[in-house]
Amino acid sequence: DNGTCQYPDINYDCEGNCIVEIDCMGDCGGEAELDDCGVCNGNDVCEVTLLIDIFQGWNWFSLNLEGDLNIGSVLSTLVSTEGDFIKSQNLSATYYSNFGWYGTLNVFALTEMYKFHSSNSGTLSFTGIPIDPLNYPIALSSGWNWIGFTPQNEGLIGEALSTADFYEGDFIKNQNQSAVYYEGFGWFGGLEVMTPTNGYMINVEEESELIYPNFNTDDNALTRTKIEKNM
Image 1 (cartoon, rainbow, N blue to C red):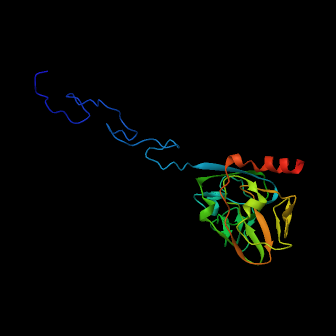
Image 2 (cartoon, one colour):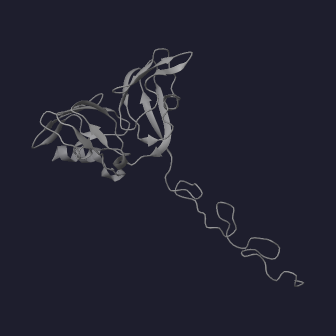
């Protein structure tokens, strides 16, 4: 030491070497940290990927991730064929081999259900940010409504639909199961658990607002249903 270095920069020695921890941004002594997703200075909101099995013929499905919701992006992992067809309650689109998807359905809505007729089986893979169902209310109109399922985990039908008003004979179905509402009892039928990526048609007597709750992974709706049946 010849006395030429009397006041090194903070966090550095006289030779310019960092003497403290370097953060994920590469800053000596910085405070940036990796979030739970491994993103430097991120917000702990991780991207996830939905994998939806698509079969030949009709498929009912919905989405619960925020991302690129343009029809060409959402269906990009599928092998589409001339005449493949998709529709929501009010919009639709058809696939043309030399063009792509064409029609009034251009962007998917996260609160809606879609019926998709495919000539080929495959896997719809879609990556995005999980949404909070509390921020996506669904307006139920009198009559039929095509609705999606916005929570990230499954839930018992009575809990999933608890915020809306229902009357004797109201009816809900997915592609394979259904349930009827009985006043004084609740929902009864083969459809006992509502699950992500499924689409539902619900017929109600009166309009109301549906806001799905946030179900946790440890809610274990399927197990609870089996226990209740055995009681």
